[in-house]
Image (cartoon, rainbow, N blue to C red):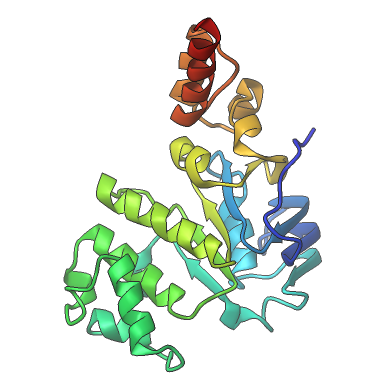
Amino acid sequence: NFTVRKKRSQECVVKGENIIYRYPGAKSNTLHGLNFEFYKGERIALMGFNGAGKSTLVNLLGGLTYVTSGCLKILQGTVVEHAHEIGYLRQEPDLMLLADSVWEELTWKNTKRSEKYLWDLLNKLKLENNVNDFPLALSKGQRLRVVLGALLAREPKLLLLDEPTTGQDQQSLEEIKNLINDFAENHGCILFCTHDIELASEIADRVIVMADGMIIADGVPEIVLADRVLLKEGGLIVPPLLDVAEALLLPECITVEGVGRYVSKAVVGRL
């Protein structure tokens, strides 16, 4: 049973009805009748085993392939009609670097944004000192942020990130978290594939868990990521703080803030 989820807006950005996908030449379907709705301002973590169908779903949303059957709507239209309003950061961001400088990456086929807007974006990306640098000569974290910046510069309505934190150092992780939060606060809808329980518990409004090409959970992180049976079924690691909360005889918690709240209540109650 799916847990109750909260919406940050009533404006639906993506709607999927009975989505089925089978790779050409395959004998069986990869995705089996998926149903979902994503809303403006939501930060959605897509989680599950490798091979669960996450990347296949993201490829459908990004327009790299098309549903075998079912109905997929982006902003009330088709993926093709709204391709310019979708940003997709793939697992190999280096393959998306095309220009000779960071500035050119952000302005390539994008003349509608003012220089002030782009400089503000560069500051948020911590790339203001690299505008003239050759992107492929930068560090791995910087290269990923250049690609992310090029996508954000086009102000997409839907942003798709496939494992955006893999191989990133702590500073890059914090910068990516800030960018995700900023994008959602500015009313974008973001879906990110991740195995990072900590990232999902910290910034996601919703967690969707997939297994064997099906959605097995769709709900708030505090409930989905505290369900040990569901975590095992989805191939996810139990959050360390869940064990800590259990050892302290606290209700199930997956974040430091959650544990802190219950500990504070207990202390106050004894005063």
